[in-house]
Length: 494
Ligand code: NAD
Image (tube, rainbow, N blue to C red; front, side):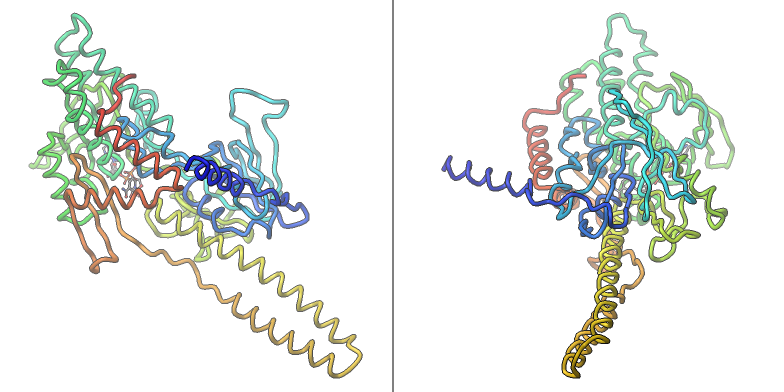
């Protein structure tokens, strides 16, 4: 059996390192892809890399399975379980792809170059340089919106990247350990144990649910002294949370939060943040506005997306982007409006869909098909050119007829290849975990529009996420983490 396992591992290892992977061909068109998130990675997965000289640029040398990121803030899942190194799948490609770990700081649209900056701690001789492109795909995502509210960047924690989840995890434990420090003032204990989440979108809701689970399942057992004062509050400016879900699911979420003792403060708009308080304006049932100071120990800021500077700068170079506010306006083939050789996918693109992973993934796959088809079209057109010369030079009528038949065949193939419709998003549904082993789902493909909540949905949520997880390796790791947390409890070390 051991020999069998050994041999299988060897075969798998061999498969992962194709010895015959040819180098990128610089004589081909250079396709530069910015980003390693949902959009760019879906594109890379389906792209026939042998058709282009492909260069990937991203400060993050891994793909992150973001739907499970809230689970990393409490240690239900370890962050490495939802990271997949970009090298892991680039080496499966037929032709090699160049990858540079760097941030794209500027795209010069006229000159067709991307300026990049290596942000790593160790510096080589070069830390900033430029990469020319023939074709460019912008999939850099977005940054956290703060709406310029003072104090948010200094005191709030975001939930977008692995580092954010780690910071939150540490801060939760720091708050708990500091709260029970000897001779701590009772008011200070209350403040430290008040966990405030701003933003009632899916990010805020999922995090609040995970945090309350952490308290209920583990924290109150390991640190019973915090039991009386540990509180989670979700603050939302609009009249309800999860605006993209149906009314029934909003009510279900609000009811579940009540049972979990998560306090929801709707119609409450945060205006300012200091190191210990948030200042919020709440609107009462009588419409009266009231300003209040809410003390907090942990502040998680989840109020959605804002444009990255590199995207804003690119937009300023293209007159057709003048009126676009939320991101790069694209046409139905995801071409950035006003350009011919730049495409955009995911949260940095505006194509009339919500900025979700699902949309980005579908856009990425669409572009892969489009680029594969463009390469095929070019190949066929070249062959056709050769054939028509051959036809002219053919010595006999028979030869000419044979070449002519070939031309007809190729023309037919060309027509078929060229028939590619525009991008159409197919919504598979929305899914969100709301804590205490419950989830809500709006699933359009089940029964027109099927809304469900509860424990069964939770198992559906788990299996759906597990099946969507990037690689078999990730699937195994996530499953093991779930079992580990259930059996031993979550790890409460800081
Ligand atoms: P969001 O934009 O969906 O929600 C942000 C919320 O913050 C809004 O409801 C807004 O009213 C509120 N807000 C803004 N400023 C505020 C203030 N000053 N005070 C109080 N409240 C304020 O943001 P998100 O949850 O980060 O989601 C971003 C995108 O990612 C969305 O398109 C979402 O659908 C998607 N997403 C989906 C899932 C899922 O399907 N499970 C999970 C995470 C994110």
